[in-house]
Image (tube, rainbow, N blue to C red):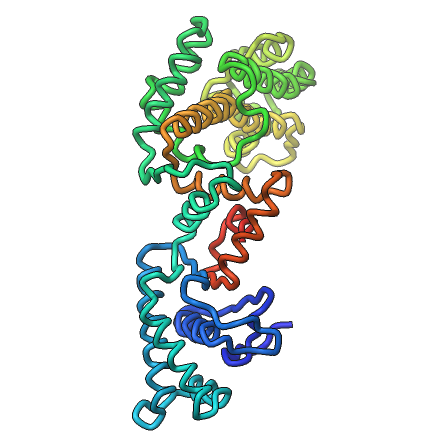
Length: 411
């Protein structure tokens, strides 16, 4: 059940979620809770006062880490001054409530000393971006995480991505047969185009079978999916084309028919519907060869526009079906997604291989690798978790609503 936040009484054990809108004092609250953790203030069972290096504070940008560190330091300095001389440094409501837990005398003097020492130790405080903290954990716990001690963070992966794309191109595109090569080149004219096209996919979760087989296999799967969808669309269209033609022939044979003047294009329509029927009966035909004119004139909207005020004309449902067919044909699955997924899987795998060889990893890799190291299936996961918990008895996570699924699992 949500409760009104009181920074003096908020439990400092377990998991607590603070919901706050912009401008309501989130940074102030983090600093206030930090002061309490430094003092060991809280309900019975609070283990001990903590040092700045033991209180993990995480946010999403370097600028935010600097701001948080500065605000926390200023808050510790102000709190220490208030504890030493409340008259010279009048407390705000929060510090006034905190002072009541530390009566004047040795207890308050000790608390003031802790606050002052913590302010001086803020250069060693554990205030990090999430990416930087993950890198630190992988390096400091290299044995448990299975990582190297001397790994480097590679801020930009553009050059690595381009190299991996070229390697993939040589391995997968060069061996293609002419027809398959034409299909691939229609999507990517060169390796640089492939690298640019994959930017949005790299680093994202991919289907388990995305990199299965070769690029030629992926193209074949894409073509098969398209052919299956096309075959499903063809079902019944030989009969529907006959029904449409029969209705038009009835109109053309009856000069007094209300629609006679609306559909005078007998030769054109006969040819269009013959093409449509032939397409439906040919298992290998990909395109029903409908022109812009046929799509407009055989559509319900096109016929209704030509009928104008003519009354008593009921269009057979096959004309509405024709509209739906033309829309469905434009939405048929293409080979592009299958090719992109295969390329993304191949380029990603090559990038990971190159990173391991060079001992260099990107920001996203740090998250993924710490997440993998903490997975229950890993033999050292429990030990790694216990060591991190011992290293950081408390954690304050800023902007928690922005965490990704991977970050949430790690936390």
